[in-house]
Length: 245
Length: 393
Image 1 (spheres, chains in turn green, purple):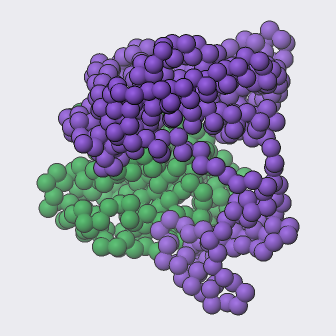
Image 2 (cartoon, helix red, strand yellow):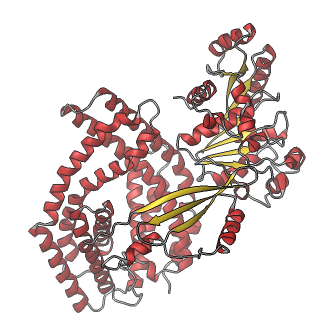
Image 3 (tube, rainbow over the protein chains, first blue to last red):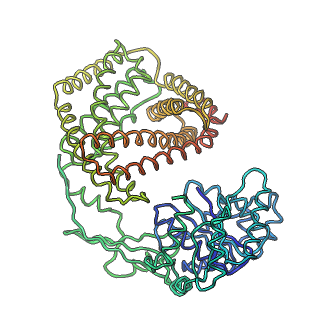
């Protein structure tokens, strides 16, 4: 089971779009895929038309009175299941803090699913918190969507530094540019330079396209409702680069 | 061999909730002559919705709940009734003489071999050959593991003949497996097009034709006929003559412990970096233990038997993945070489086969990584205690 998370401290950078589309592409590859929407805003849950409710909320999961297994809902797509968001996830930080090993809880919750799923995506809320630290300890690969701006790159460096201080298991951090506006010179320059110069930044970039925004209208991955669009093409290229093909 | 063919129309409809999310699928199946059936397929996490659909449907006139599957309906029209392929060990009793018990069991396997010969020759379904092979393999394992309780050196006398029979059936089964799996392997290709493998498929089909002729010749041969009739006679003799010797329970207790010890010893020597041969040796020991557990099931306590079998199965699955990855990868290479030689291998086909081999390689690596995790529970002290308590006193 390979665990990915889409994560950035900033919001509105294309995390959910990436998680939803990449999860769909992974399922199309024939993998058994689980997407866990950890963001109380529940955007990924909404895209899959699942009700944003988990019995007992985040507390039941954190405290172990319910297993993650009970919360799983099938999506409309073969091989792709969803753990929906719950507005009560906003309290996850406080609940995690009461645990014995507060930074390893998400990983423990995923462990029993190892034989059921090949690929897991965690869609994380934008913040730096105990929950995000949990996620960092749970994943094999951290996918960081970034808007091309000098400050984003600085944040990416902070994140890599933070992760490299981990003892033992460390996730691979892979950033990619997202919401790239081809009309902005700065965007194009940064994308071109950084992906070649810096380790950990992928060559594939996701442009700012209105069809990606339309996902919320269609309530489906763009790779499902517009498989031949430029956006789908980019996500396929990104997934291929991430999986090293 | 009678074959029943059923033709039916299938239709799939999705049931949506207020959010237009699919909560269940309804499958209708209408056989050409017969009543249509509607099946509710719940989606994970939506069981309550599926129950509600079922309740609503039963209130509609003309719908009634059924328990018969389309298979049952087809069966009702067949001119023969199915046999339980697993009846072999049902009669084993703890206090019977081991020689008699084992001979009866082997007679059961022989019947299974014979039953599957016509279907194999007629090539109705690949399962006939598979079941035939299972019965042969069980026979050979029993001869190897407990054959020494049979009098008159029976085991040594017949083992080579059953090896011949096993070897006779291997090539066709291997090719069946490749052909059955080819579609799913082709679908996993990423750089090559699945159609690139078409020449490979044709090659396998042609090759299978040749091997099948050899197999059919073997199953119709005097040698096979003689083997089965001599074997039946010999086993009948054992059942009539034998008295004394160890009982089934004594034999079961001793051999299960021994088999577990052998497997555990091998297991404790294997880790993530062990050479493939060591992993294969472990796989063989596990298989032997599995056979004994199946054979002696009737004299074992349910709880320890189930627990031990569960641990063993999960270990065997991983070992199986490991072995399959290696064997199939080597086979793909050999097939590629043979296709080159015969001039039937376009470059794109070879490239696709190369990618397939690489995926099999990755598959094996995954299995290797998973091995340690599977071994641990199998080797745990708990399991040793389970084996000790296995055979009911």
